Image (tube, one colour):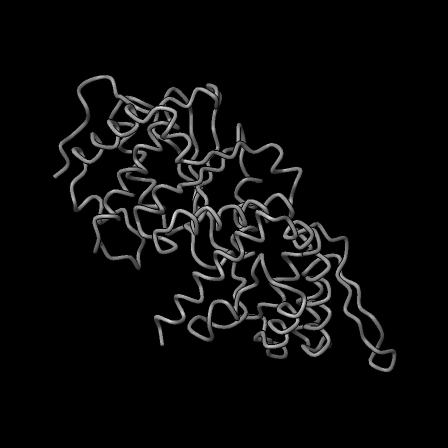
Length: 338
């Protein structure tokens, strides 16, 4: 059982640089060998929905405790450097209004207070409560998961100290945020409000089909990668129930702020089609007046145009190094599977 609420004023990390105004906090996705463009778009969607001071919280030290990206500090930093590049490239205006905070840097500004708060969180949290805070498909099988969970409680306590806070995340961390909100409330702080967003469905094949690197659009994809992936994307004529290319057109029109999406067709096939919203596109695709053979190459061309700003920035030395680091890690994973 939980040991109950704290009896005295809590020791916690002070984040004075964030001021006392209400915070809308989005926790960055956990790092891996692949930086998905869909993750970039999900983070931007979440940040864009927030009110008050928007904060992107990067849990780099927690990721290392969990063993994410092989537990390598260099790989974890490489992932987040590329994620941030994607965020700033796709929506620089929004990101100019976001306070990006790295967990590790914040901890080093007050390590004694932070680790005291984490130790206290561990004393108050039962193993059963920690197990219940994991994602639906995650089993508790390592001490690193326990450490990362109570570090999250310490993070939220620091963010909630003297402020109103909204925690925005996907379904996989809903229970974790609920535990953190309860923990903050036990110290007399206002319980953070929890907002859950549904993940974007942008995988190019059905779940379980193909490798992630081949079925996801990546921040690091080159023109030939985009062309190849959309050519092989699942796109059954008239099927509106599962059609990743339609979802990507919607993402282009909304997240990349494209004025219109143009499907190139020969005059004998009816000529070009122009869409300013996805509704008419879906209608005509469902009626089969728009064929996958016309949709997919036009989408690949539009996607490559939208990614120009991302690719231009990838020429910088630090991002080239980050990509090389993740590529090496990805190759090491493939070798282990053989």
